Length: 308
Image (cartoon, rainbow, N blue to C red):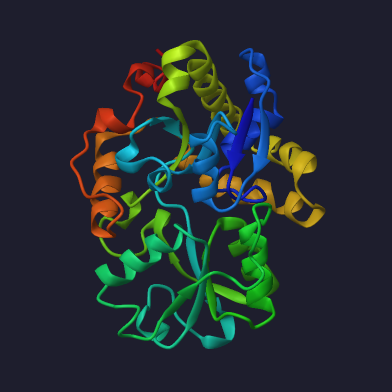
């Protein structure tokens, strides 16, 4: 079986990658290969077209291939909350939380990921068009095997962009190298009210797979939950995953990045979270009909989130 991940050398979808590389899928009877398919819309299109069996990606990203989430279900959260950072060039001197200086700046963001930043800025009183804030793909971030975060960090260092909206790995590289500084960290309280729930990382599969092989869907969710638990118990296990799939620099960084994410490692998908995603999707125009919590979440597996 295949698991699509839209940014592999990253902390964003790390619990799903850990489930594969630490053997949790195998222990639950599944042979799963985690593959990079960038960007997230292409990952979900691959799921729709039967090329992959699972996606570990942004919850709202499913709408790229499954209108109103018809045909797809979220099994569990990889972690809680919107997980991207706004990082700007350090020499711009922009203070954390200060968005006014973004006017006239070029910010790199991946397709569908950029929606979160656009909505956040509007909620904060900044219109990207009116304030001349360019939000566009990062130069060189092309092809389905692009690790976006690494490409964004390099583009920032090369002066091709003024900032990026990307994952914690890109952020760590930019900050520790001295090229970037954090302006927004939504997971930890930055940004306008409600932006934490714009989206979250989720393990998704098709309704067809759930109907035909519910035991497979259950096993995949159990593998994710076990991987979250293993990382919470011993964060050094993250380095083992890195050694299997990351370059040396990123392998050295991943455990400290995951350490900061551990408080958000909870597979439960709350009605509040889903309401936030629905509201966000409506606001940005990728959803134009009513949907319910049970239309999006595979509720039959919810007892597994709390170990029942």
